[in-house]
Length: 334
Image (cartoon, rainbow, N blue to C red; front, side, top):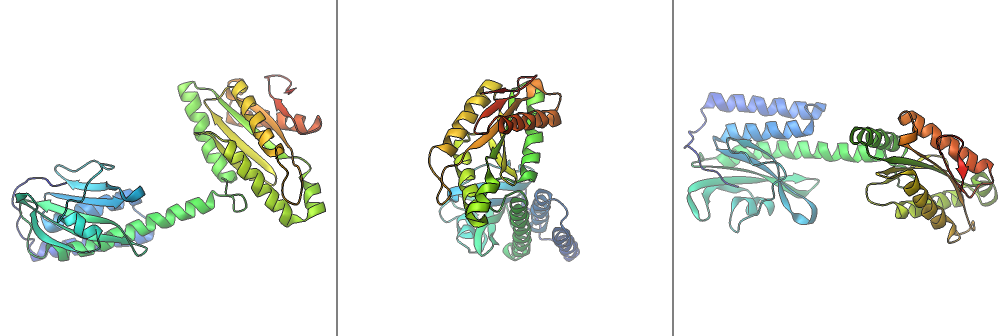
């Protein structure tokens, strides 16, 4: 994580005043929602670099299973984001990740290099660290880093908040699947990618048969429980890269990238069997009707949805508990 460079000089008072103003400006921007999180992180790293006269400033984040990776960096030899790093025993990063401030000191095994670090705390946990290194670091480096560490904490809290809000906004509360907004976003991306790379893409629309009768006979709570179980079974049927969402009432949409009409029909048979194979608690056995269309037969994304919806309508009109595939003309029941 460390880099060699020229010896810095202590920042003069005027420069410290400007850095304080820069830090305040960053803080105000973060609280106001701008700049975007990644840009805000990069600005904090750059300000920490300038504020300490270091050669390198690195924001390290603790990821899945405790793995440490570079989130952003600043300096002439900045490390690429996503690079995996190790906390050397006795080093600044190790101290910071344990929640302690690492005062400016030489790097273990490298007498010509110094480093300092402060922890970055998010929601009461050590989420990462801000580390600076250089041939020489001025006295009080760690004090200057504390303010930037607090700024990083603020930025990462905002990132977490936005992630939570985005998840809530795109998740169906009852089933845990994506909602209509989630479907629309994923669907248009999938169509764009399929068209760009000339890959097959299919869409399946599924509807739980006679669901109004379930609510009328068993009550809405048991109906909701049944819908949640249908969602669980459908999600278990999905393969990597596919996406199923609840798009309204008892209707679900299943995006099938890299899948032809034949493949989508096979997937639909698996889904129909998953719903039919075992009774649902308190409401008995349920079935689904499924309409399928493929992008190669559609004019655009909207037409693909219309074709799948038309096939679903035919499936229900033909007696339900069946799969109807759009064949480019009249759908054929399977």
